[in-house]
Structure formats: C-alpha cells, structure tokens
Picture 1 (cartoon, one colour):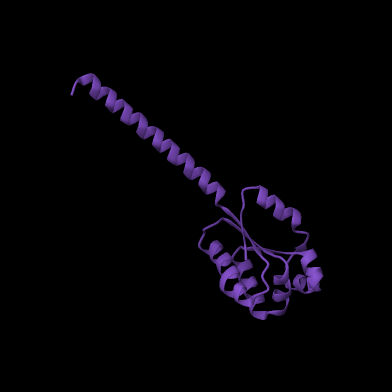
Picture 2: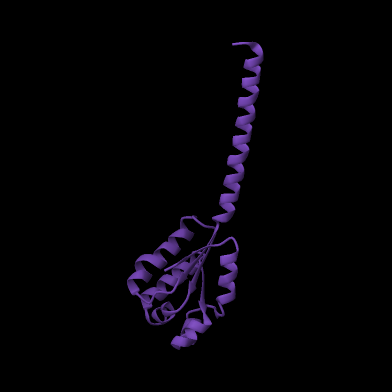
Amino acid sequence: MNKKVCILLTVSLLAFGLYSQATDSNAQSAGSSELNRLAVVWSSGDPDVAHRVALMYTHAAKKAGWFDDVELIVWGPSARLLAGDKDLQAKIGEMQADGVVVEACVVCADSFGVSDRLRELGLPVKPMGKPLSDMLKGDWKVITF
C-alpha cells in the first residue's frame, strides 16, 4: 500500500474514532440527564396494583439508584386505598425513609374525603395538576399505575 494512502487511512480512522468517542460521550451525558428523574402517578384503587406493581417498582427505582429523584404522586382512587390500608401506609413510610418523595393530589383526596387522613400520615396534600404538567413538559420520566 502506498505511504500516502496509509497516512490518509490512519488519519481518517483516528478522526472517526475521536468523533465516535465524542458522540458516545454526548449521548451518554444526554441520556443520563434525561433518565435521572422519575415521577410515578399512582391512580389505581386496586390493592394488587399498589402492592405488587406501583409501590414495588417506585421503591426499587430509588433504592437501586435507577433514578436519582423519585416521586410518587397519589392521585384518584389510590388516595382512598392508602387512607384505609395499614400495610400500604407502612410501605409509604419505608419509601419516604429511603428518599422517595410522596405527595397527594388535594382535589382527588378531597373528592374521596381522605385529605385529613393523608395529612395525618405525613403526606403533603396539595394541588398536583400544575406540578405534574411541569414534569410532563420537563425532563421527568412519568409513568402511571
């Protein structure tokens, strides 16, 4: 192979390698910033969904470090379920102790007559429509159970 071709090939491969490395690094940086905040909207009034899906996944996402910030939003029928279920209340306490932020929608809780009970459990009960909308528009990953 001629010397000029070898030099050109070497320079091209080196340039391609640097470009690929920079692209991979930027993708990882962008990906990690997109994936570090999770909001879980728990709306189901089904105890099996609560125990075996919504709270289990939310807690694991925080404890395992899958996301840096994890927030659980108690929304709709889940407010009534939580207000009356001691096992779920204990689980929420564990989640909060491990760093999961838990908040409840006041409109939902009021509609089920459980706002005071949720406050007694230590949950902030507040308007959540705007905060949720901001999460959806922002860099949060939002899932609903």
